[in-house]
Amino acid sequence: MQLRVKAPTNVVVDRGRGFRELDTTFVVNDDVEAALALGADGVHLGQGDEGAERAREHGLLLGRSVVTSVQAEGIDADYVGAGPVWATPSKEDADPPIGLEGLRCICAVAAVPVVAIGGVDASNAAACIEAGAAGVAVVRAATDPALRRAVDEALGRR
Image (cartoon, rainbow, N blue to C red; front, side, top):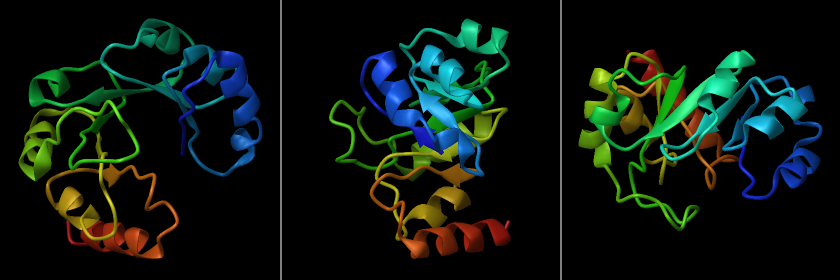
């Protein structure tokens, strides 16, 4: 699970209290200091975000955002979030969609697991897995039980 709060570190920490108790891998978006304060398992950083070295020093899992296969090739990360695969209303400043072909190219060169992001829902999640993604990240579809079934079925066909 990723905590994504665009706010100062103290606000992120306040909003993130209690997440560590959940039985899941806990990652904080964009804020290494908040991840450390919350006892998170990792931090997810975009292309322009700093903090990868500090995250590594403290043993945090490191996720990075990529939009192209060039960015994914040889990246220092434990996983990459690739996308947006499709247009997404949840991020106003998102890059243009890469589509399934862009996702496929990233999956082909990445030496780490790839998570498809951006516009993913139950109707297209299986296509992301079939393109090579290890999983999907969602906002709007997070509570849709059909999403989990679609991903599980696609992974089962591998």
